[in-house]
Length: 442
Image (cartoon, rainbow, N blue to C red; front, side, top):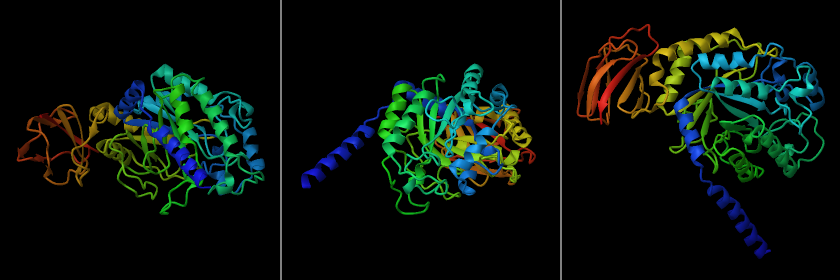
């Protein structure tokens, strides 16, 4: 028994060392840099779960069985879907990438997969959504990231006995993770082989096998074999980034860290228990309404001002904003979403210089606003110009050579001394963000 225990310890250590030995390829590091510069992306939550109009968790929330939920496949016919319009909408909003749901927790695959009959080709629509989006993204110069659920409320071989969700789906068999792992590998191989260059894979569902949020025990009830999954992805497409929405410190082999409904360092949603990485690119995902998937009863839309301030604050913390839409069953995008995306795009046409390719500010966000920076420029985002001046402390540069408003190059008065800079405002209160450019000498 003692020898067996020792062997198991070394076996476990071997898996750990294998994962820890991940060294990103040159193309992966380049992709990370591109991702950090992009700053703004579109999240698309869509599938047959949109039909009931109650969000993407409808199968779990209404305690629907696999047998009954499968009927939605016969009703999913998004005849108004237009991949070119989706990608153009994202581009016009100033977004640089799209993260598309390929398979959510309900187990429905949005592409022509050989490993599940519950897929888009067996609907009345019979067209590969992932392929159309991939082709159009490549055509229009938008990078495509793919969301993939680790959790499945449908399959018998998913370890549903230990899962926290999907307990009313009527599954009778026992989970078999070895079988389920092979299924995921097969599907990921399809996605990373048949659809051209993929910017990254966005995993979700790890938390289904952990204790409830807020518990001191955050360990998983199963061994997900991430070393095998991640190695496969990096082998198929070395540049492809991996992120996992597990709400924990990044695991070995992951290339970016995400925060759900929170900015790095915040935990207003109760999900972001992790500290922000100082080595990996960061991303926060958020909704325009309060729902991810299409929800008929949700009319609580964030305003243009709220969305712009969110983007600015994310950038000032060195994070991307992945902003979500939940299209209708027909494939149409709600006009409320379209209008807000267009409004943010108009703002970025003027102020994009202060967002794209910037890094986190040298100070954290302040009551008056926040800071982004790049090369010899510091962008002071004055989001609350009520006072006659603002004080920027701990300035790390030697000298300010010029200060002006980004919008019209109008000079701005300032006083800089002993690492403290006072900027005299008197700006328009009608502007969402009065961006002051400080040209500096380091």
